[in-house]
Length: 246
Image (cartoon, rainbow, N blue to C red):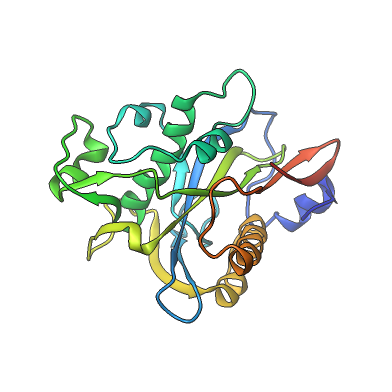
């Protein structure tokens, strides 16, 4: 998608997003790319969005959603790696450690809610927040130290919804509990573990296919996803969808 004009991006994404609407500021969001490295080739977890959803109906996506700022106050077993924290928070007046923590925690929470996977460590955990009660019920302390940001993308203007999304990766080894019936929401109709070649061939949004390609290349030279490595950032600038490293 690097270098495409807005018209070209609109055409490419016309089946992914509802186009139209007035200008709106993109909202913070996070999506979690969970990787299984037990086999010869890494597998990636994807789920199909319910076909009745207004946003990307029927598409295969990673678990994720909008950031809830209150997630920053939830206790964790480990903090973000400093290099990952700086990259997640971004730059500017809104770049704070609390913002980075909230974004990362939203990826962990959404992975539980949509996929029934609790990322963290076994141990005592208590909370007064209903959306985190399952972690307490199953004795899991959420953990952020295992997370690695692998890409960032801002939805171009002219969409009904816009997000400033951090794509964050973790390993299946970091899942403390896998609930057999999945998560409590009906966001995803089915969950599948796919090799990269099958994932990119599935019915996925254009930006998702782009990020998968980026991640596959990185894993070839950096299979452990070393903290602090440069990552791609996609956004619209002067009528071009550009890719820069941050």
